[in-house]
Amino acid sequence: MTSRNILDTTFTHQAGIAVPIICGPMYPCSNPELVAAVSNAGGLGIVQPVSLTYVHGYDFVAGLRYIRSLTSQPIGMNALIEKSSRRYHERMVRWVEQALEEGVRFFITSLGNPDWVVKRVHAVGGLVYHDVTERKWAYKGHDTGVDGLIAVNNRAGGHAGMHSAQQLYDELADLALPLICAGGIGCEADFLAALRTGYAGVQMGTRFIATDECKVPSPYKTAIVRAHETDIVLTERLTGIPVSVIRTPYIEHLGLKTGPFERWMLHGRKRKYLMRMLLFLRALRQLKQAVLDDSGAHDYWQAGKSVTGINNIKSAAEIVNAFAKAAKQL
Image (cartoon, rainbow, N blue to C red; front, side, top):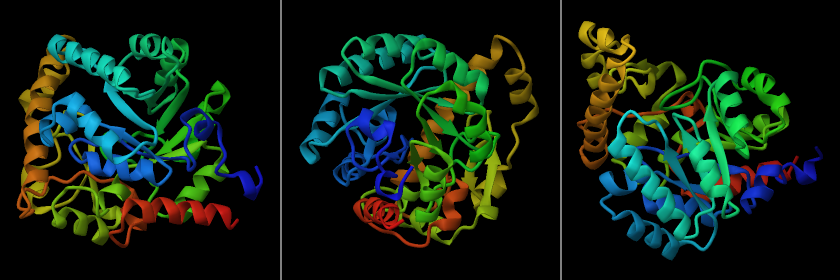
């Protein structure tokens, strides 16, 4: 790949964008203004439907139309396809249908089998990229016909993977699908390293939280700017699965491990789904409170190890433009 076309990847062609950067779907941080700002800058903003409706208070369709009033560029949607709750699955099916009706043609699927999303989205000429942390999940996505993979590595915020970006690339490259590097991208050097490795693009979450457009409390953004990767810890207290967060007094008080009863529930073949749902509902409330409380007193803040490369709060456009400029100057 020459320096002139390092930004010209399979992913940018598929998505119809100029810069191979995804603003990753974040609960609860994906507000409409942030999604639109990244797309306007040439990247791809992704709608997180629970964040849009439950946290930021929009009717789903009205929220999509509001984002459309802010940008005419492509946007995407995140479909969480885990089926432990029938009611939630039915709601997600409806959201996917509504997004397609509103013209969304790029989807990122997470936490389940993407077969039904692939069939529906491909029927109207859309694209589906699937979140994976290792090869066995990549196989499942590949077998259902997904168009690309979001390779979540061990430096990601939220539900991080187990492997480094290089290890994950080596493990998945032979599947002949575009790979997106998710995790550890905080500065231009990280971005360029991912593209040089062979990734077709990157997905960033933490970097876009520390932006003017992201509607989280200023103490959250400041904590990201001040943090180093040694300040990022994994807690099981959110969902029962390790989640990357900033070590704060609240996290210290809460602890990082689930209790004996929760562990017992999570190790049962059937009861684990009930426990995950209960933890998930509790996490929804806690994280929503952390984002809506401007005082920063509820410091339950998700972030990845990319904090090491994040030293300031900028607009989303400044970030995307700086990354693109660095690539063009190679």
